[in-house]
Image (cartoon, rainbow, N blue to C red):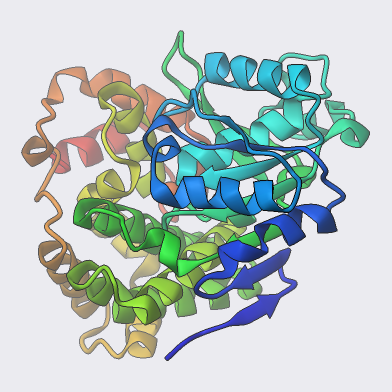
Length: 381
Ligand SMILES: [Fe+2]
């Protein structure tokens, strides 16, 4: 089945195979004449990136690229990108890639016209109103993985290279004006990345669904996002060229990110410090800590997860759902626990302190304290 769709929620989304050929039109829609394509170093030399630059070039938009982007982008990458953007006289950004390329691309567009340091725009209270919104450049987003959902998000994650802490930078205008979701761009993903990014999408849906905040719209999106992952992630993992599965995983990823404005939780607040300290893959780390977090949250979410299980066609309520997560992890080759990931518990107090500081912490259904979070970490080893 060849899926093609044009959506306007939460932004303009062009979904379907081969639609990268509409990249130049997307730029022109936003008034861009000289876009800067931002991606990570690994993607810079890949054929899909060359092809995207060809599409821009053939339409007279040039083929400017910035790719000095680390796997966990930091303020040094951002400053270098902003300099290239300003020196090149660009008028917008094509954010191209997985989480790193998308987030840094969005942040370059955001910071290109600001005068305050980026940390002044952390997602705290109304700090975003400090930004001069009129100076934020237009963004076209092109995801090449199916997990982060950053293509439909109003935030970007930036790691402080001094403290290794990940900060969320927020502004409503960080939401890209046009998104191109072309499943053919995700076909070359290695199996482990398909698994890890797919489990990130699942974690977004699960945590958004489980969070205690009242937001039924997001709850519904999260539920259907989990269903898409259940049906299509094993297929995409088994056969990377299964375009129907790849397309549905792109939808699930976008849905997870739309849903998590309802909140995230302990999976992410544990995974963020582990990733920051040990450079582990974000989605894979989420998958590793997911079962202990489900056990931790059980008293608060048992009934709710029972309803999700029923919708997903899983028998046995919470226990059935829990067993399903274990079997999905096994099918995707997810490490059993943090020890199997090669991590030792020697920095557990530091990780616990960082987890409590993480913004995702507040959305967890069971309130997180230093004591219970330390115990939860131990349970993950
Ligand atoms: Fe995530």
